[in-house]
View 1 (cartoon, helix red, strand yellow):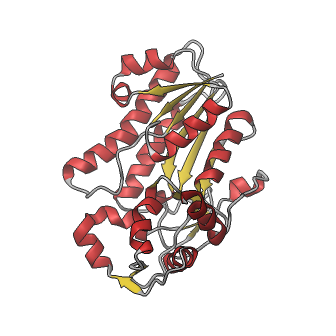
View 2 (tube, helix red, strand yellow):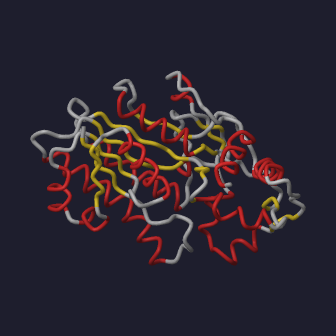
Amino acid sequence: MIIAITGSTGFIGRRIKAHFVKKGMKVISVPRDFLYDKHAILKQLQGVDIIIHLAGYPITKRWTAKNKRRIYESRAITTQNIVEAINKMDKPPSTFISTSAVGIYNNIHYHDESSEDYASNFLGDICLAWEAPMLQINQEHTRTIITRLGVILGRDGGLIKQLLPIFKFGLGGKIGHGEYAMPFIHILDLIRFYDEAVSNEDYQGIYNLVAPHIITNEEFTHALANTLNKKARFTIPVFALKLLFGKGIMTVINNPIVIPKQLLQAGYKYEYDQINEALEQIINEQT
């Protein structure tokens, strides 16, 4: 089996690539530049059995006009180019797993995968444009899966890598009132999903990749501090984060409440569905 992975040098991509290489599968890393070249991407993907599309310009970058264009093109345009390549193949891949985010939903309602209460903001628009090309694929030839990712927790990247130095010095704290939802998933549960999705043909459609246990930013803050045997006495004003990081910080603090209904119905068993267990494993792995 040959698996092509875009974004294989990123936080998630590195771990997923290493997982499948360890299993003895042939893994092709698709260069970022190829995703914007229709001829190059078609040539690169010929003969591939599985495509896992993870590439995307960092969403938490300050949302300048230039960065917003990069965020959009690295998601919507690259996905469209891959879909066009698949549709031109005499022998298309059996499975295409593309990425999206829980930011597609508004922060008013509870959401499972059937929800159409989408966010009316930049992130919501990006996610809709990101997912739209998937509808153009012939499902009889290529099984399609869209993963709507929550906050990924792992030892070597993402939010934990940014927060650990702060919390280790006892300077951690909740953001604002702390009641912001934080739909999370441990990186190991995420990898296990991809492993299952590649091999199990029953997996198809949209999946909210979050743990079933709903937590807030305040609960996460105290859990991380307790795991490190530290206190989290501070409150970080939202306006201060906006001044430092711009509107991109809203992807961290303005999350919707999301339920992984499809995964639960599929009988998927989480290894780290509780935030305390997830953080304890991550911190122990750090040391």
